[in-house]
Image 1: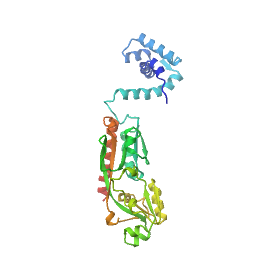
Image 2: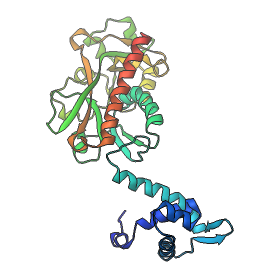
Image 3: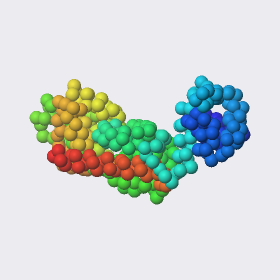
Image 4: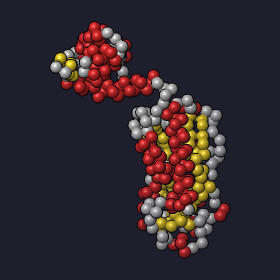
Length: 315
């Protein structure tokens, strides 16, 4: 949206404060006292407001002044506008409860499936007005973080990051082979040769081309003589497993969700491909001094810690 700066430059934003107080007080004299001005000065301000909005705004009555329909329509908008302006001026007094902006995070479905329920439960009470937007497929994530199209990314940990990026290792997980409960592999040794006999599902991995220094899941290395399906939708992958002979190599922690993995079992990875997958929270230094970004960074970390504690107690 292109803003009409010339129109804003001619406006006196103090008039909006005066209008808000007049609507609340329904009295010129009470509004004057609250704004620490004289009653004649408040009356002049009211006249200016009427000229600005081309409406009487208030009508006199036995109970003071009553807002016109135009003033009532402006009342609800004024609360949001003045609150936003107050937030701009009070950047040093950040309040998650009052924050109204948007946070954009790149997160794969198989990570979000576990983390987002816990994280959004925290946000619901601690930052109820925050808008969280998740992107499950995003390439060149570091570039997106640098130019502001992403605020955060949760991704497979890289061995190194450019100096302008902050990163924090959130969690790690061993891998497992997921198959349907009566899959032929449940009756065979889990060897590389036997795995290759069955088609496989590959979960989408962002920035795969940039990850030469990262150990990708074995399915990226093994290949299959029977073909593959790539998807970023974890629940779709599980449904495919339930009705086919496909296999899926993914983090073992997925098995903790009994509902999603109904009728599926996990099998061990062949020893030569056994490894731990690590995930990092990443942000660009451009957000390092932003109160909302610092707060959200800590919320993600705390949400992951809470999940670890819950898992230990369940175990």
